[in-house]
Amino acid sequence: MNPPAAATVTAHRGFGLSDLGWRQKLGTFYDMSKKQIIEFSRYPVAFVALFVQIFLIIVMFLFATLAFSGSSGTAGQGRLAGVMVYGFLVSMFLSFTLWEVGFSIREEQVRGTLESLYLSPANKFNNLVSRIFAILLFAGVMCVAAVVFVGAMVGGMPLENVAFALLVLAFSISGFLGIGFIFAGVTVKLKETAQFLVSFLQFFFMIFSAVFFPFSALPAILRDNISRYLPVSYNVDLFRSLLIAAPEPELMSYAGEFYVVLAFGIVSPVVGYVVYRWIERQARAAGTLGEY
Amino acid sequence: MGEVVSHGLGLARPGWRANLEVVGTVVVARLKIVARYKGVILMEAFLPIVFAALPILLGVSIAGGSEKAATNFFNATGTENYALYMLIGASTFMVVSLMLWLVGYWLRREQESGTLEALYLVPTRRIYILAGVTTYAMIRSLTAFLIAIILGSLIFGVNPFSGNVLMAIAFLGIGLLPMWGISFLFGAFIMKVKEANSVIQLMQWVVAFLMGVYFPVTVFPPLLRFFALIFPPTVMTDGMRGSILALETLYGGWYVNFAILIAMAFVIPYLGYETFLRMERRIKRNEGVGQF
Image 1 (tube, each protein chain N blue to C red):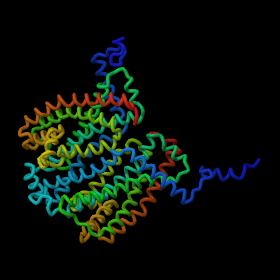
Image 2: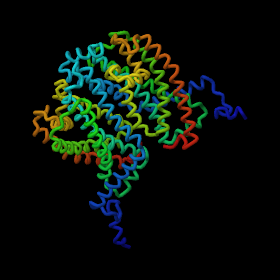
Image 3: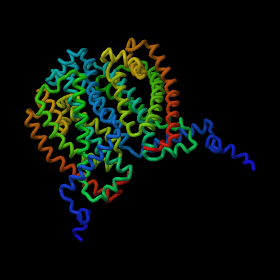
Image 4: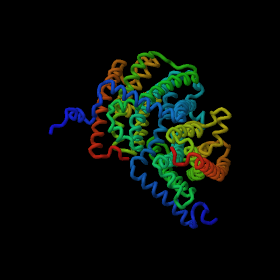
């Protein structure tokens, strides 16, 4: 006896009769983002903590500079404060991407909801991207507040080429998403160690991508052999060089750095997602996706 | 009947050996778990080096060279050895941070995995379980401290044995006792607010800020300085720096710091445990300890 015609449709990639078009993808993105925002709103302390934490870090480093700046104090340190704060803002977006994309997968594992998510007909890419959307909106607000706050403390910071810098930031975030995807895959594999891997990556980039200081402060051997090979370094360098209106960025020319940032922003998410799907397939085949 | 309900232990009368065994078992269990994640200890040892490197690189670039940085730093703090100053601060911060992190996160993890209420049914008093967890936290944080100081000294080219090392060790040893109490307080707080991750991350920076990881707390305005001076990690760090770098301590002499730290070692663990018990009772009456 032949199966009914609808059965062949139902068997399509396990999605049943669901529509896999752009509306479904947009719907997934919207619903998952909404879920993230609702989750955030249930933990108000986390919101406040994030705000306070960022200001504390900035103030702590400003106090540290006081001990090194001699009699001049913070007066006239606007440019250096710009180097520090603008670099920190880029690293903040990187950290959020790593934590939210990568670590939330870990949370789903621990809660036991990761496998259920894979059984739903939701688009996997949007599922990953939506994890960061809400926090990036929030981070944007914090960035503005941080710039105003530090500017007030040091008597004004340079703020030039804002539109171009925002474009660079957009490509940077896109590139960071790729790292986040890879990290999400690694999380599925490494499980508990992932938390420390995030911390490690954060601090690795803090040092070698010269987040808090100019690249000239790094020993030449580190700058030439490590920093120059990290795309994140160019994101940091270009973003802050534009905002402080430096004659040239430290690692390359403006045009050269922009091409690196552009390429990173386009290639990284694609590579990252391919790597994530590859690790995820392996985990599913081994039956370890939901294990923790 | 009165005997049966005593402390919920039924007719059991655990002696000191049984209690010690509970502490030992908890310590061994925690150590076995962390031994499964080998990169973690190494990571914890490297973090203070990164924490120390950030202000060093920033400071050198602000001062315009390492010699100028040393001179400016001497004028601000009384020592030219800014690398060792930062390394001691960052390594001590790691100890403090881990004590909070490990105890807070342990509680939260037990809540999330649904085993916290089960722990309340075991025939022992909570103080011994908590003592086991905090002892484990001490062992882990001291291991990280030692590796960080040795590795950091090699990387920054400083000699940590240049001053009164025994006195510094005494400050560290005594300073851990109030930390024990603070971790109880922190545990109580985590039980109440539940958002362990965000609270821990915020507290890390509050602690780093208050204890003057990168700068002497004398730069603070009066009210903030007062809070910093009554904060045990500040006294501990200051005593350690004073001993190794031959600096005048915040309270005027090493013996004053030492006396204050001893007083704190008596008072704060008691206060911490009492607060924990009160909070626990309140939560048990309301939503229950297992809810998260």
